Image (cartoon, rainbow over the protein chains, first blue to last red):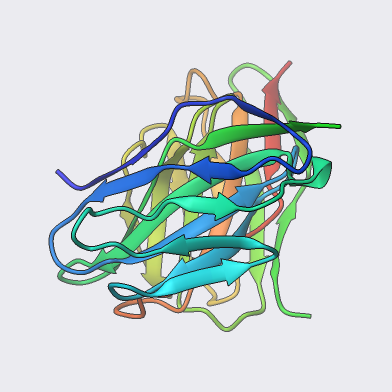
Length: 114
Length: 114
């Protein structure tokens, strides 16, 4: 069935390190792909999105490219900060027959230490 | 500013009691959703509604009920039949069918058992 797989956490990095969080998906058709971020005790915030193959989403120094050939949408940031500590969710949206179906990955917890 | 408001932020339930979580949006979105999040886990869909006066069960609807009498409002009732209600509950909204657009989330309600 349709699914989203993320790398297992928790991930712990030093400040200014390079970040990659892997996300791969299985879906029929051509979904839109998203990364959300959740800070402690809060809801999810949209971080970036890509709606078709080869699109690159970017925001706040984070980037992810929609790779149809590898069904992947890996999140990257060149230099993480302590304030980036949060849980990151990969998600996809596509059309079912009568509604937009959304599937979230399990989330990857990131801790950035000074 | 447009957004989603969930209330209360914290809620306690006694044995055998029903409790209702509020969700209001002023984004003019057609679709609304309720998710449950358990510690260290991803989001699981409880109910969703694509239009006023219509809603559908998600993956874990047992022990929950909803209503959608107004476009702006989608309250969730956690009934006494839900034997393990302690969780973080997130409400979301989206433009609706065939939009392929991301969902917007509220800040969540944390429900605990007394």
